Amino acid sequence: MLTQAAEDYLKSIYKLQEKGGKVSTGNLAEYLDVKPSSATGMIKKLKTMKLVSHERYQGVTLTDAGKTIALEIIRHHRLLELYLFKALGVPWDGVHEEAEKLEHVISEDMEARMDAFLGYPTEDPHGSPIPDKNGVVLKAPSVQMTDLNNGQSCVVAEVSDDDSALLRHLGSFSLYPGTAFRVIEVAPFEGPFTIDIAGQQVVIGREVAKHIFVNNIEETDNV
Ligand SMILES: [Zn+2]
Image 1 (tube, rainbow, N blue to C red):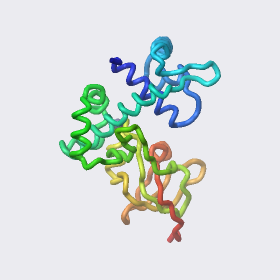
Image 2 (tube, rainbow, N blue to C red):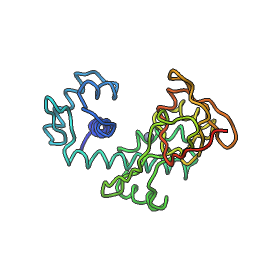
Image 3 (tube, protein in one colour):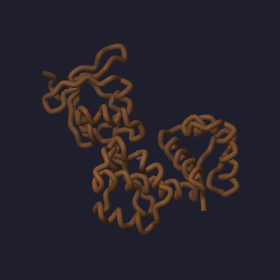
Image 4 (cartoon, rainbow, N blue to C red):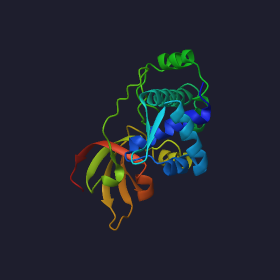
């Protein structure tokens, strides 16, 4: 049995690897908000358990066994988020925090029942892919909203799930996965985005736009 902390490390390494680039003990400590010495200690333990490898120039990487556990926890997390959202009516900015705790304790039976109840879903309420029970993740390609230009229309694919204030902000504009919008203007010098959502003009700051991923991008005539 792994501790919850160990599971959180494996999950975090997976997520940092997914973002691309090398995972160092330093950025892992920063991501998990722990002291670098704690991260170093945990990495040593996980290495002994053959769940991670740690090479000087490659940083920390998951072994196949480590990746299997990380995906299992992420599957729990995302199924729980969707279950809390759909079955219990927990708002989309509140599900992440609950799922962070429950992801470590639910049984395989509970996981299978939630999966069936929800109709074998492939995405959580924030648009993140739910790994299937074999750990297969199907992720449709998307781009960061900050890459959009004037006149482009698109559909929200995914938003960051772990900042409830940000999610409330996005929710106030109905910027949920599946929502279509069009870029009216990108202000120069790294300025904000003015967008049109169902006929309503909304200004989205660049810091916020970094947390929004979109697809189905099309050029439109800017009127
Ligand atoms: Zn979450």
